[in-house]
Image (cartoon, rainbow, N blue to C red; front, side, top):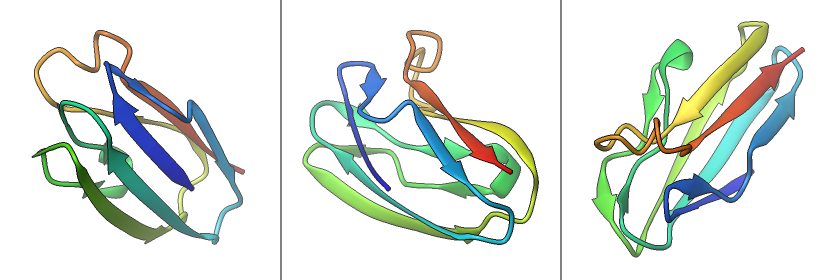
Length: 87
């Protein structure tokens, strides 16, 4: 998956995978100061100013719906979040 972050939103609001899949997220910060975190999987990019790119890789070993979000300031509350669905 490629997810761009800018203006308090992510370019992708939902990612669907199957349990056991290897997940690769290319996070591209295209404007501002952002990161991408998924708490339940313990993965996060560093908080960085654009332009910035970082790749997260992990195995989807937990079933459910998990929020990914920007942890900078109130960005999450302003709508900078999405859902990772693992079936």
